[in-house]
Length: 157
Image 1 (cartoon, rainbow, N blue to C red):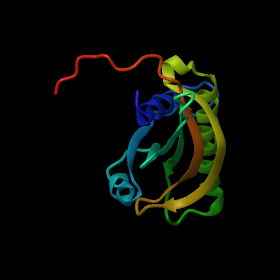
Image 2 (image 1 turned 180 degrees about the vertical axis):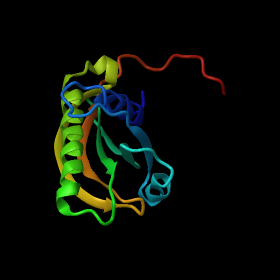
Image 3 (image 1 turned 60 degrees about the vertical axis):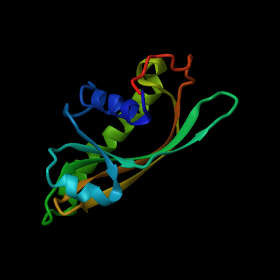
Image 4 (image 1 turned 90 degrees about the vertical axis):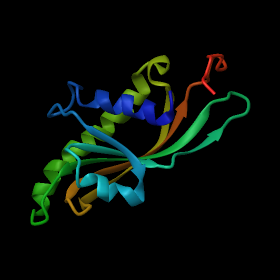
């Protein structure tokens, strides 16, 4: 499982969490920052972007990889909204960030491919992109599990 697939796996479980105020099914997108605005034009909200590229450091002893990731959780907002209206969405997206971290900590690494999350930071954003979206950036270090075996599958050349 790639790091992007692992993160998408976790994000897809956030919406079904009973601890969220409103269950939500996310549109999950992964793209370089330059293309995110274009993709947002066609997206359904709530939205979760995984910013590419994801840079990883391989530990030569454990073979685990530590990736620095950037996610943004967004809900649709309006340019003319006042701060109180944006705060409603910010409460939702902050809860998505909390749930993402909780799931990374608690889902079996054999199921998700993620063995740890650390150095988590969040940043509020308002009226992001030309479609006007409000939410939170989440940055973190994600550690992938140690692969148990090498790839011995027959791959087409």
